[in-house]
Amino acid sequence: MSTKDQLLYSDLHGTAMRYAAERRNLAESIAELREMADGRDHVLAEAAGITAGTWYAWPSTHVRHELVAAGMLIMAAGHDGKPMDYDELERWTRTGYERGMRFRKGER
Image (cartoon, rainbow, N blue to C red; front, side):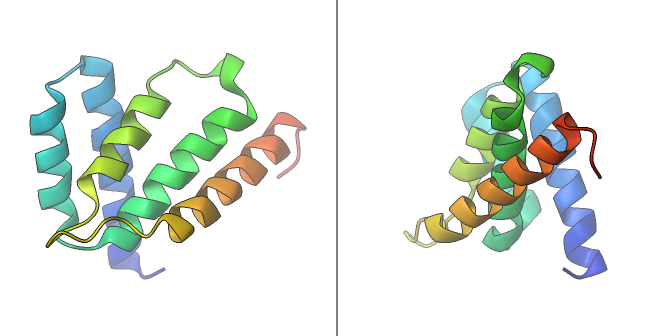
């Protein structure tokens, strides 16, 4: 992933988590995330998948905003009538889950 994509990933993840915690209007939040991504759905898929997968690996330790944030990122993806690449979302969800399980076990 390029540095530009890494920065976008961080912005999208942080913004989605903040919006979820603030319980902002979903439609407005999704529209803003979509605008931030500017058609780079692969970054939305990564952010959504890792967020959801990490939560699933250890749900008892999370605040509960992760799944709302992941849902907003998923809804922000897709443009011109084309939905998100759900295969890519699944791949990133597995990556997030595996990372979360390693962290849970104290591994790096």
